[in-house]
Image (cartoon, rainbow, N blue to C red; front, side, top):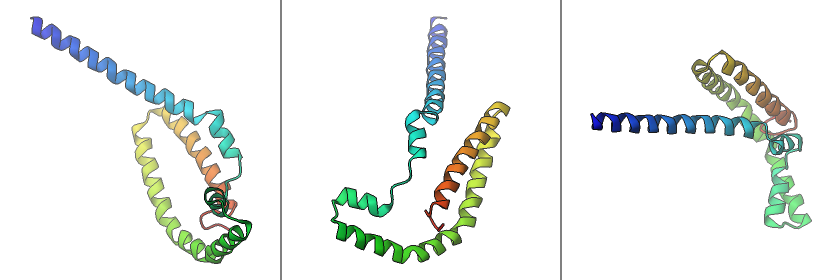
Amino acid sequence: MLHRSKFYAASLLAATFAVGVAVGTGVSAVASDRSPERAERERRPRESYSDRLGRELLLTQVQRDSVTRIIDGYQDSMSTMWESLRPRTDSIRTAIRQNIMDLLDDTQQDRYRAYMHRTDSVRAAREAGGHRGSR
C-alpha cells in the first residue's frame, strides 16, 4: 500500500510539473509576441545588409559604397532565385500552418489566424521594401 501511495504522489508531482511547464511556455509565448520591444522592432525599417556590414566591420565610406554596388549588381539574380523558390516555400508554409491548425481548439485557431495575419503583414511590408526578391 505504501508503494502505491508513493507512486501516486510521484505521478501527481510529475503531472504538476508538466502542467507548469506547459502553462509557463504558453504565457511566455503570448507575452513575447506582444512585447513592446517586438512591436518597436517591427515598426523600425530593416537595416540593409551593406549597413550591417558597415557597422560590424567598421567599413570606410568608400568600402560601404563598394559593398552596396556589389550587392546591387546581384539584385536581379537574387530576385529571380527567390521568385523561383516562392511557390515551394509558400506550399511548405501552407502545409505547416495547416498541420498546426489541426492541433488547436477553436479559440486557439482564431488566435493563430490573427497571428498569421500579423506575420503575413510584416512579411508583405518587408518584401514591398525590396527584400528577398522583391524590388
